[in-house]
Length: 636
Image 1 (cartoon, rainbow, N blue to C red):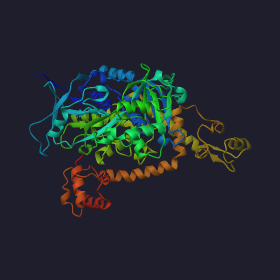
Image 2: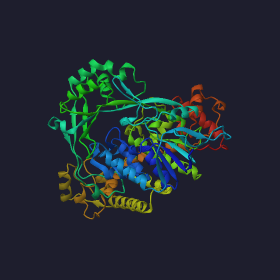
Image 3: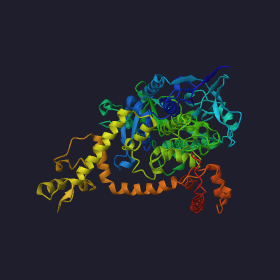
Image 4: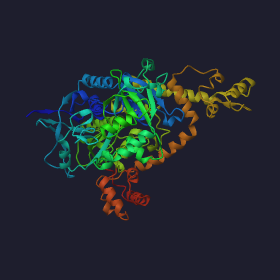
């Protein structure tokens, strides 16, 4: 029997596993990362893009904290677009089409070049724990065992198993016990997790067919080109290095014939005939779900996207399905531009085991199994970006546990990552969780453009952000503040020349003097448009100008949200003891006692977000805290 010892073990080398391993290694931990196939490191088995609405925020925040995803996509994208630019800055989100193989190769290179990381191809069968329990009755995780019987010991273990646990791929009558893209499923680990008392559930996701791009009629589709200039994901990337030739994506629509085909064959869909038991994602439905749930809608958008420069394969975004092969062919061929499409890979649904993430703390550690963490789709989330964000946090906290440091936790007012994790560990979820801007109460503060200003100092304190990056950030911050003060102090008068320019910009002429800062607040104006009125304007980087414009234009709304955050923080800072006996707290309703005992919230704020805990119950807890000031919270 082989026995080896590391500081941190990461099980799974998808987007969560890669970020977890890199974070731990960069914090000085000797780390080993296991994968069922070394060729599937950072695999993108579904959509060929990184980012998108709210997901772009997560990638920017990852980058600001010292994560890797932003760097890799900047090197391997083939098209880039900023979404929602017609709306306010709170919902602007960057999305880049990836060259899948280039992305995989680049992320693998990053892992291999880190001297603290060992990559090992093996399936993990068992979580190893200490024989004895601690004073709280908990059994500590000490390592893992492979199917071949080898033992690997560590101070912390991160589970980032993705959709591989007891995975089953299904379309029509075909059912195969495999992971995505025909990769080997992990069939042993679920039993070990159940033996540790971990509550499991069954979720489902899916992916569309891929078609040969040479066989498509693009004249029947709408071309979608990339942005010029390109905005990079990483704050470290020189914008000049990402200005390159881009590949087009295409948009088509299904019609009445597709609707008819699906309606006539719906009884053959595993989603509707009972063959699939797992719960699918509400916000990424299959084409048959769209047709059946929106019967009044004649057609649906289909995004035809390249898989990369290495292949002619095109991804049919919006057409995920588990329909039988013959129905898939008919549906695809009934779609404009796809009439003669040659199918390279069938669409399929995939069922997999995952956990109820409410068993975790906000540090992504299991409450009842010290030194065991979980990140990514095993936690019931969906998406590459959500997985990577959790992986970073789990990797950081695995390292900090070994270093005997306090856990790193982001709250809902600090980052979309904080919203994501808080939702997962607090709120009951009956379907794969997808990040959306609407989930954030403070989205005007948590913009993708200011992620570095919000989080890079935290990354620097952790040890993941270097000196050069933090000095650039501080220079940027001081530049923003200086320019804001200059604009507030600079006034212009109601001269004929000034009013003539304002009229050309469809803005009301001046009657008295006004500061440039106040002028920027006008809805029809901005920092760039008033440049001719600002004769002493200094040369500043675009990133500084962007922040100055947003901070001045939305100043009133920003201040209002900052006040809301202060109120939120007051409840978040009221910590609840980990060992609090809720049954002994008088006047709590029975449902609240049950929910609070099960979840063990770290604070009054988290308790207030638990389904079944009412405002009256929160008042009872606040009274109890006031009467028991001598007690301190039990941490996270």
